[in-house]
Image 1 (cartoon, rainbow, N blue to C red):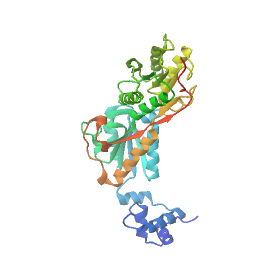
Image 2: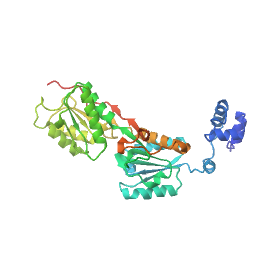
Image 3: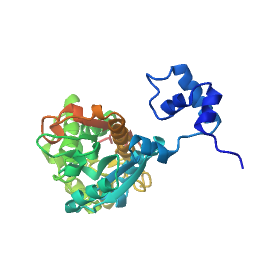
Length: 359
């Protein structure tokens, strides 16, 4: 059996000292080893299929190379688990593993989950939620490098960095897409008032309408809920018994399940999508948006991107402790900009939106 390459083999192949190999492959080459030598070391390591022993490396660095992730229910969520997927991709690429605990929406379990992970000597912590929401940050997260994904520190003086979707631009881009198709009478089924994302998406919708110099009818924007039956009732309120000249030509929905309800209401009333009514969703939920008939145009939440950005930020804090963020001013989403990263949503155009119908 072929002998496994060692750091000394890499040093001989690259024509450098063994200590130089250790510095470069442990991430401490800059400032200690010339760039040309660093390149030769990495090339030699790749040729020899050599990588540092992770256990020995963790002992030297006094690290476990394990990241603890606490979620409210992301592990069992139909699509927000992609946040953890994106985070895990980045962690594994940097030689870390993730350990996930789900509290199943029981906030009383937050502190114990964090303490359990700290007892396992994790190098850092991430909290992930289903849906944008404020978080009472468990105190244990303040003892190690930590970051929040899809949630934000609810304290008057936020202490942890958060990575969230840019909901204002998402709401704005959804409405702009319909405006570009010629729609002017656009309704907005806005979800539930308990979600911090809802008012932000409405702000984006209003901004797009204002930019187009189109007044927003207040009866066209209202809280509907999140489920299919909520979308059905909201659409019937807007469409049933209303003449073609008076009904909206397009409806923006706060999630894809609402959009299903709107499509069912349109079918009940004999309306064809998108010939008579354009429907815009939000989320790009797996196994829903792309498989609807017609396939749903929607705003895709950047779930994997948020997870990846949060994990990259967390690993940077671990590798460079002096760069850990300090407390910022403000409250909730008005926190210090240094503690906030917003990831843009993405417009996915399919068949449920089309030109404004002739009246």
